[in-house]
Length: 243
Image (cartoon, rainbow, N blue to C red):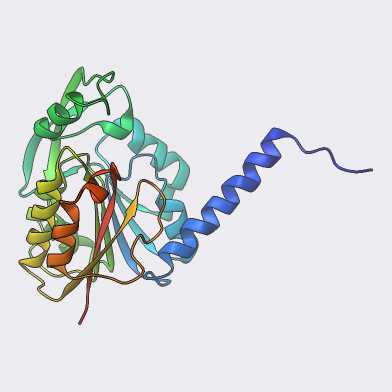
C-alpha cells in the first residue's frame, strides 16, 4: 500500500530541506567547534543550522517569551544570555512590540519604520528595563568567537560600539531605505579595529551571497547608497577579515 502523505509530513520535509540549505551556507565559514555569538537570537531560526555544523552557540536574547522558548527548545545545547548588548554595561529601556521579531532598544529605528509602510500597523506598547552588557564582556566570558551575528532592529551600531577587537566574521542586519547611513556607520565601526576587511551581503532571510566576489569597504559603502541596494528592503551585511 502506498503511504498517504499528510501536510505535517510535507512540512517536515520542507523544514529539513531549509535546515540543510542554511547549514550549507554557514558551513562556508563556520567549522565544527567554532564559537558563534547570536545577538538577538529571537526564536532561534539561526541556531539550528549552526548547531547542525557542530558550532558552540552563545545566544543573547532579552525578551522573556523568546528566552523561555530557546531554553525549552535547546536547553544545555547552547549558552543562553538573557541580557541586551550595547556600548556599555547598565540598564536600557527595551520596547516590546506586538510581534517579537521587531522589539527594539532603538527609539530612532522604531520611529523610522513607523513612518513608512513597513511596520505602520504595528505597535510598541510595552517597555521594560533590561540589563545590558557588551560584546567585549562576552568575549571575556566565552572566548573570542569565529562569527558574530547581530540582528537587533536598529540597535546594531550600539552593539558594535561594545566590541573593541577584530573578529573573523561579523554580520549585522540592515534596514533600507530608512537607515542606510546607520549601515555605513556599522561598517566604519568594525573597520576601526580591523582595517583588513571585505564585504558581501544577503537579502532578507535568504542566506545566500548576493555578490559573486567580495568587495572592499569603500565599494560596500557606495553600494549601500544606491537605488539597487535600497530596493532590497532588509538583509544582512557580512564583514570578514582578509588577512
